[in-house]
Image 1: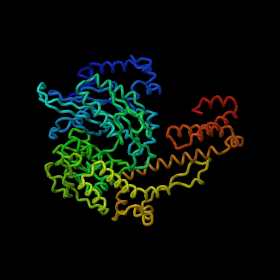
Image 2: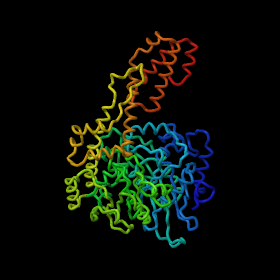
Image 3: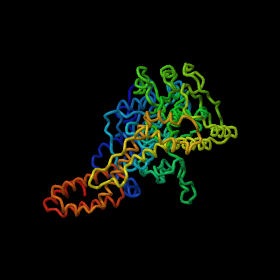
Length: 608
């Protein structure tokens, strides 16, 4: 398969896009104004007023936009990459090519939207965007970027066209991003893709210029994002939001009449629509995802496979799913061999597949969900049964959950009756999703609260923090000690569900999700200790201390304090702003009390 776009041939090197790429390469000086911009445009442009360079605004949201077409001689090929200075390795381009088209057996006529996720090539230089790092710390853990992966959001069109040799027009517009904002980017594609297929490259360039003018994706702030005459109103959640709530304000003010699209969520999928065929087994699937078990979703199309995989990953929210997941996975994927080998146990990963070949290749996997076509809202498919794995021969097998897994917890019959009643009463899918999401949230919280309570007890007492000693260490997590706490403060305090909770915890403590969760919590608590240590230092009379110590010890203290300031800034420690200011004042006072020659050296060293 040949790839085109960044090389000197193919549509990617001609027209307005090619000129834009050339202009970018010529701009070596950090010019804030793009060539041809009128001064008044620059004044109105918020991105430029923040001192950002051309395409910095775009890069905060997207890595690049690709157009993937089908060529009779070349097969699937990247026709356009925009902006042209965007870097993609050959391996990444190959993955994008194959993942941007449905398998031929899917038979997707018309317009289809889906999502994929692929591994970033090793050796790629990770760009550090300080501004975005600052925003990252305010995000819920499940919305933080994974530096090793890209998301691809696809709008695929396949329509009959007698003027083409193949008889069909086949093309995908693909947004490549680090951000897991599934619903948001699918909405963006709905706004721009249909017109792009009619108007081609100049339209795409104009849309990308609109994105470049967007404000940064700041959590907690209501953002107005204009794109090609449409204004979207969104709010990215923060880690301080109450889980399970949405805080986007509805259209009430007169001044909001220009808003065209209001998004109540940036990342959530229609949970009930995805779980609908299997909702009687949703609690068992929640356990499998929580425990990081290898799971395959076999679906008739990439839309169904990607939505179902994303719904599974979403069902343990606000806990982050720390293993790999591929909403749409093909036999051409660069990790195909790694994930289908029989020489070792299947890895902790959730795969969404559509090719019948996988029914044979992955039949040794322990848990397989086979789903039929997802019905439109209001239509309810027949509930599938749990079946033995040996009965799964081909993708033609009946829909079902093929596993020998025995759940640890008893099924919550009350919630199942509520959902079944909703089905009978033709309750809207959105309302069913709210019920299901709240149920999963309460289940996850009941499970995680005892762990949070125990981990909080590992924190040293504040009185043990001395400014003149290194911050104390966290106590070790002891599984046996944790298990003993469950008798009095276990999930029975918040959940009506009975079953083997102890067994579920034992299994969870060996899973990648526990490992990822505990590492995150340990890092947060260690940073909290560092912040408390800084505050303790600020309360000391450091100048008085220096009068009783030698110049060498005083210089050593100044250097250590400067390092503390750098660390607090670099790691975004949870320090009060006045603490940092107090410490700078202390440092300046100590330096000014030293001889002039030392003052000059220390003022030049690091930051004050």
